[in-house]
Image 1 (cartoon, one colour):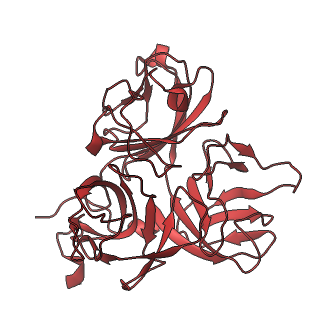
Image 2 (tube, helix red, strand yellow):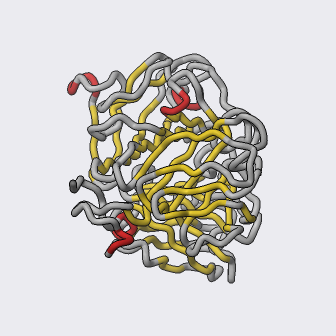
Length: 355
């Protein structure tokens, strides 16, 4: 029986693009759509991650491997630098500065949100804190900007489905990135910029997101609800055949766990929640044919890409070694976020490997 899914996710809502730096201005193309969130990393060098989105605006840089506040790259000692525009097939870079060094091998991960919204909470009755942003119900993704109150509150996220994962960053102050992941419950959080195991302080007011709002609390919550601070939140929901956010257990075996997704993954990000291990990112452009050792980028460090034993398969991914980052010895839990290259079964009900 057919079901609704996204038959061409790489041409619609998520895509990985590799490019070579040129030490100046360049237009990066091949995304297939106008992205709203671009995450860039030099795969070969020890350069910071650079994250830019359409809600905060161009030339506004956040770094997943740092606690630093948002950097305005429209001026500075090195001049204008960063993502200076989003266009219909990619984005424009100016200056070098880590993500465009001459002859450097760069990766960009690109997501589309799409529809803008503004929510006056007192007028709409949705949430208790005003928010603005951009959302895409088909792709289960939204970018949300709001101002913290240091009081328990709720914020409209724009989608019509409850997020399974939310990545938060305080734009104004030096603070850790905080991540909510539904598989770990509403009382747990984990830091994107650290290798630490998860924490259990009530960042999210011990309340799970709904189909209209997510919650923030006051207990240790400057990172997600600092009084008067501008906060950005990237919200993700499961979309059958396109995206999935879940968990798996290590098995201490080179014949590691297989994680069923229902699609061939184009992007997988994994974190051990029970021990100090780095976040690992793999994608189908770095490893298009399931090589035994693929390129993995750590979200929380500036290190160059290295090897990891993970296979990207037609309906999920499989760990092929005992390694702390993906399949640690002992009893450990991992969370993941994954996006599709193609669904295992398309919206006509036909397996993609049968076409």
